[in-house]
Image (cartoon, rainbow, N blue to C red; front, side):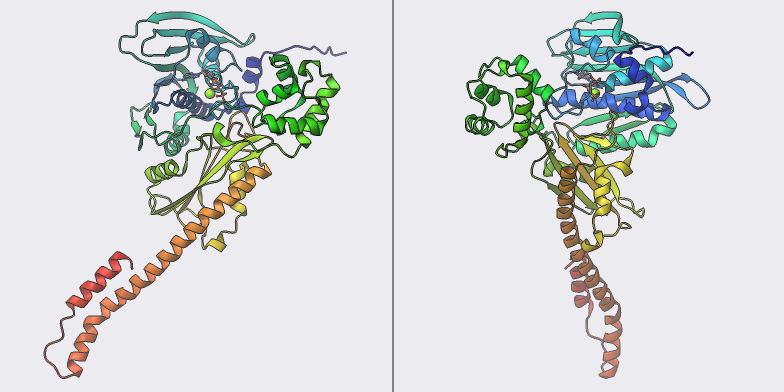
Length: 509
Ligand SMILES: Nc1ncnc2c1ncn2[C@@H]1O[C@H](COP(=O)(O)OP(=O)(O)OP(=O)(O)O)[C@@H](O)[C@H]1O
Ligand SMILES: [Mg+2]
């Protein structure tokens, strides 16, 4: 009889075995995902201290790995907050370790991305990663060389050095080698940078590719959105586990204070109303609640209708001005309309949808809309068909707005939230939540109406221009003919009239 053996694996072992779910599927996807994960970390790091990001990415060729794949060295440098030295080994050498497990809008969510890139590099090249970081212009610079002990999910420190920070540098450098297929990945990588520049118009991004080609995305503004604040859980989104954890850590010994201090938008009045509604005494000590009482508390929290919706101060949308700046900078369209929806919620998580529609200019005409999807300012480039935005765009009756897919039209949808409903840890597409779907649809309708007005106006201008063109063409002939008919010798001076007609046409009515 075959023997069944049971074993336990570590988190890094799990992601080593299942790297596809984090986007590291093949050498093409892996090189794209590695760049993306590191750039996102850098953008988060600079934004967290409200410094316009300066990010330098270099991919250099190191050697052939096989017929199709090569070994590259990837270096990403930023001017962000840096990492305190004691956290560097775990932040880069231990899967599911991070500083972003907070209810706050950030690109990072899972405590995984940077490590997946390093892990992939390690298993394909057996080389350590180098991390250099400084947390302030007056602090020292720390350098670590490390690898990941995949079975134990622990960093292995191979070297550590401390340098004086003579130039007052703050930021982080991450460098490691990995196998990849840059040629295949190139279009997506360049598209990623272009779209990142579009929704982060305050960032300077430089990319040097393996051929030494330089791609520079220069910031169009230094204005940055206000950094998001951390928020408390909203009562509609809690479950029993969360309640138990809060009860364990709470310093408050009565229910009134417990509710007021651990939940989002619960003040004295709401807390009292809720306690009356659920029949719990305000003076009850939360630590004395039985398991059954905790379950009941959770159910009552969901039933109570008077909790205020989450407020959006914990979110940092781009804002209509910045979104417009980004679209104008990267697409140079003839027309753009942007719209930001009011904050909404799903499962107790606040979110804001921003949409833009752009027409003409550098937007290609390719028999379908060009769709740009973003979540917390991250471009989403894969699995377009499964994404909620695409589903909504396809469901809109565009003919109503005199818009057809063969026009040069780009649609931008940005969703920001303290918890973006991603379908995978590779952050490629967003789940189809009815609340999110509704917000996107309403946003699209608004910008579609504006585009319709523009197109109607333009059609009118075109018609007028054509009419005036015809007029300009036949007027000399008419003048000549009528001169003859009237038996005159000299035709009237029509130049003045033609000039004003041309000017009229050029100004576009
Ligand atoms: N360039 C950087 N500057 C400052 N801190 C960084 C940088 N890169 C990574 N970190 C720190 O390392 C942690 C781990 O990064 P990692 O990318 O693995 O996970 P994450 O960003 O938290 O989540 P996600 O898996 O969604 O990317 C981060 O939470 C952050 O604290
Ligand atoms: Mg990250």
